[in-house]
Length: 496
Image 1 (cartoon, helix red, strand yellow):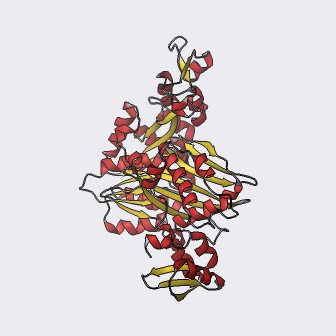
Image 2 (cartoon, rainbow, N blue to C red):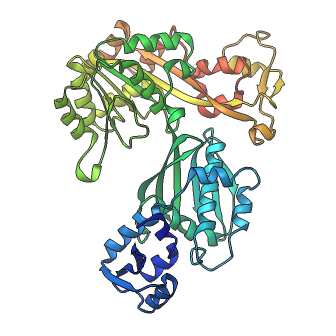
Image 3 (cartoon, helix red, strand yellow):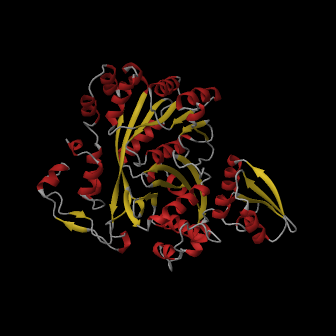
């Protein structure tokens, strides 16, 4: 079916009446008919198409599959969005342009809803949002963007928009539109201004209908060099030193959305020199990496981190990246591989670098294995950067100075957010990386082997280096972020 065929019968008519144009010829039309379709709809289809119909019976499952495949082809068009959404319109005007029908997709075409989805994604990309949340409530629908790690509400239209909007997004992501009881995951690919954007779509049943979260993945923002991550010079040189070692495990830890994947990809770019077989296991694959073999996990068929890691060891890898160490089985295989003399990169979900060591011990990794194989742990956060157009100076209090280990009078002013058009009244634009790094030297290796406490390991590791909190102080004293922002993302006790 061609793109033109998609427009002959509207999506809503095809979906509700159970009829699909399979082949639009000059003299006749081949029409797919779903089991149990409305026979009177054939009369309307014959009138619209204006030529003889040849019918082909389709099961409900096959009909849903073909419906998604065909109408997904008229999915979000980044180029169309860029042409239409040029500053003369905003998101509210796109909503106002939609006719107030009972089902907004029951019109002769689906253009209004598609234009709204185009506008939502185009505006999200322009505002550098990482996620779009569409949440139905009792009497309205909430659309929120996650910008610089914080959710901002951009639209609250009527709840009547929720069902057709979410249904159309599911078609574009090739999801089962008839299934609303279980979560689903899909993907939409588009291009805006020459930039490739992947939109990862996830649905979840809620009280007032399905909610949708769309994660926007921009390859241009992910593939950074190590020098672009914002590490201080000491941390950067120590990370380079760790990556230069021929074997062992390097872990990156931090909460969701703290930039762990970007750091891992940057490290891989250093190791991928064309002479190594670099392989990754990811869930999901967020960005395509040139010259690297990437494998997507598929838990439903048993393609787990542990099982796949065992399999790829037979493919002679020189470097392996495991998306996340979640359980003892994965951890054991990763440490066994690293013990054979090759580097492994991975992530663990903990609040601090020393916490990652404790987590692995709690999983069941023996202290002597940890001491022999672990090379480094990077903990990281992202703090929002103050808008240079509206930031406001203020004299730091004694408590604020003490918090960052600064003596009275050593700093004349700190800065706090204001709010202007340039930053959307938030006071912040963009984010900065904050890091702490534990490299396993002889002293730490002995502490780990002796199964000493997390506090003892942390005290030894940061005797001569900065914790996350102290690392963030450089941004505060330079006027690049605020005290409040550092306290939002870093534990205050890390300063002790």
